[in-house]
Figure (cartoon, rainbow, N blue to C red):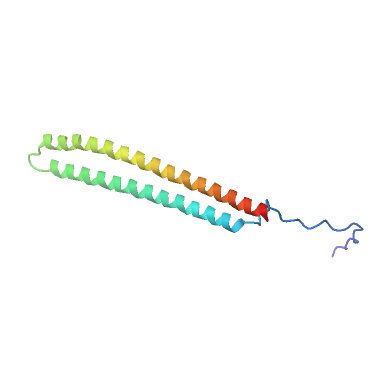
Length: 130
């Protein structure tokens, strides 16, 4: 065993005072806000994956229908080509809609970030008044 050092003639340092900037004050609400924000991001990610999955499934179905049309004895190539040509404008509309949806989600996330920052300012203001 190591020998104990003699007591210091100096008094121990004062205990740390908890102030408005202390990490312990107001943490519960802030943590809750961060968790809520994170769950919002996860929900948005699930929606994006679901949207992509739906588009891939629709593309698969379209290609499969074209394949079936071409497997007959005398396929009508003009009809198959016209289906592909008709689908192109639909894809453009879908792409535009997808872009608008992304921008709308981004805007929603920005609103959440602003709300989160406002909540932090409110909590910090309440802590300063204490």
